[in-house]
Image 1 (tube, rainbow, N blue to C red):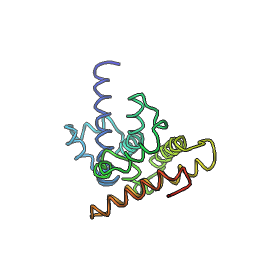
Image 2 (cartoon, helix red, strand yellow):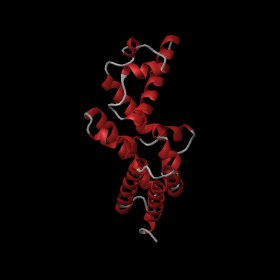
Image 3 (cartoon, rainbow, N blue to C red):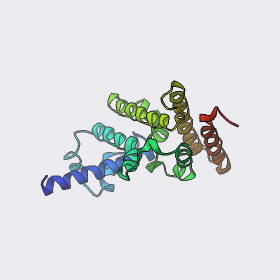
Length: 195
């Protein structure tokens, strides 16, 4: 790959990463091409050297957002499915994750937006969900069982919902209560539920 192609690829990746962050912060409709390109230090005209349309950018940004945590773990040589449930839950349902939605789970930030999107975004989101459920199933005892998969889906849905609701709450103590309650419940789920 020539130098100019490599630079173009790096610029493209930078735009997608920035868009992925902004989409998680502002929603799929909350980001404009002009503002995004200005933030990237580029002109609006330069946008069309990288993308045929805003929809194409949104699809790539959603794909980046959905897979960013998994990709980051794999780059560190970590199989995401090998992270123990307790450690995964502690990280996911943390105050830091709650407070930094632009860097966090795309599903907790964009569930409703993705559900209203076109087929391209919904297909990307669906594939990401499948991978997430597979990784969560691997964290359960006897991961090859139907019960493990059910618990993985329940845990994933509870965690995503709890994170979103903790972000909604403008009462810090109440927000923490949501995170801590669901954190304990999910940790106990493989053993049959709460103690």
